[in-house]
Length: 174
Image 1 (cartoon, helix red, strand yellow):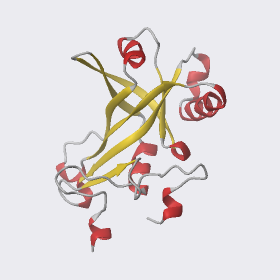
Image 2 (cartoon, helix red, strand yellow):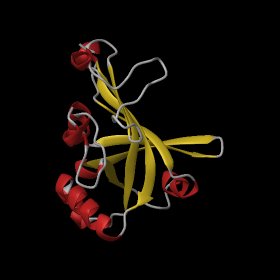
Image 3 (cartoon, one colour):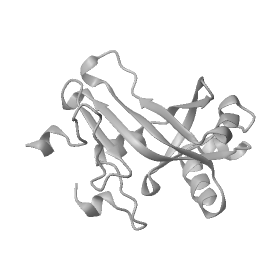
Image 4 (spheres, one colour):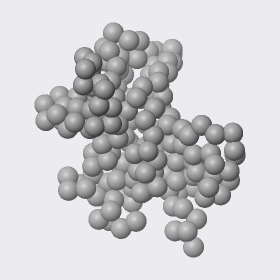
């Protein structure tokens, strides 16, 4: 991926296009929070704001995860394709910082969310944004157990998963 592909006008590095494609195509995420040593997970519909590499979703501030966002803004989660066929398994694990959408960003988030879920216009929605800091794509179509990694703070937009695997696909390695 070229540097221009990785950077948006505001200087943010974007993940590899296959990761962005998966994030665009799906609509349900699991977000995980903690309160001390108590973990919690919740499923939420989301829209991907590609130019900001962020996930926008709605949940009430009075839900357990909504309250826990206020205690610890660091979250993790997953987005996965459900399949029983091992060769078609695809999904991402992510980490990021969650915050309440506000100001101009709230306008962009609302536009993005309502474009994806137009019926939500009739609902009282409270929008949150996850600014993604780490992504790990598993895509068995690229080879069994193949991972593509991305980290926001890496100059290449890539990450090492601790096993020496960098965020390059097999095609990029050759």
